Image (cartoon, rainbow, N blue to C red; front, top):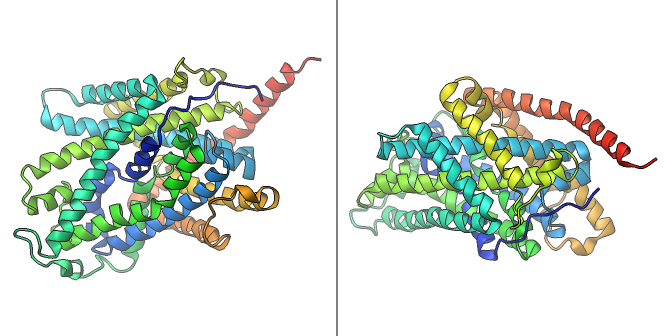
Length: 457
């Protein structure tokens, strides 16, 4: 393999810490949690807890591998080494495809908020402006990305912390006009439609956690990658409990679950009950920052994964070019171009092409989790035999909890068949998976031909 330039290590520890904190908070928490509560009932707390537990276990596995061997490309490299080239190729391209779709989706979501404030400007103009703005941020330097993400994530984290503090005071009756309302969580039934509604909820919420793993990719560009990834992955559990499970539990305590809004943010409704003026506007600003944060992280993550794929000749050769500041600018631009195309399709063909792009990546998170678990099973055995001193962070209950995670991932995939809204996502995602698996032998054959041609006779 030829030596190629690498992205420059420009991220500081505070950047990585805030990426880890904010990466788990998406716009779906602020907006989508209301729909989950109406689907599941107060038992949505269990859905978020079960989905969060699955993510915590995956992050622990990923943390073990990343602490032992911090790599550009993170789990793509671990899959390649542990399971073979097909696994690295598959997980790398699936992950890239997922994030370029998310970039377009978040640009559209952010534009919808801005149109509500400035209706005279067409929505597509706002979408393109947001894309251009964050493309420029990513092209400037990794430090520029990290600083932008630091402040965007800070707004999300601060909002959740304020909500948790005020929410606890309110439900305990210690806030003005608040009454002891902890019992609302069991008012009018705990399950919306029976026990299976919890599983239905897990199918919905599991994708809101996707993005937590970005920190292991970003850590490779920090000055102390092993320390950064260890700190980030070991704190995932309390972040899941506080930010997601804690927030949803407070929402159903503050408001009887049948009264929780679905068309607007349940957080805005809660802040309104606290007596916070302009609560809806404040939460809309926070949702916009959350969308921008995901868009920013998506461009960064997609470009780094594409850059890592090139190292094994799984992406075009020119992807390896970096700027004077160590930024893989061609990888960023290619990822952005696909995002622009998807944004255009959201207006030209929203019910066909854009629908396919968004939904065909819907179950990718579960495929990625399964491959990460498989990689950890194999890599752990290798590390214990060859380099046990590198196991500074270990997966709990190995190998049993790893197998439990694999089984849980498979259970969620199977459950998607019984959830009408998720069924199309699963079928289209399987098509995406099949296409990438079919492409691998072709790409491998081509790369071998090039390698043989480069060897002098």
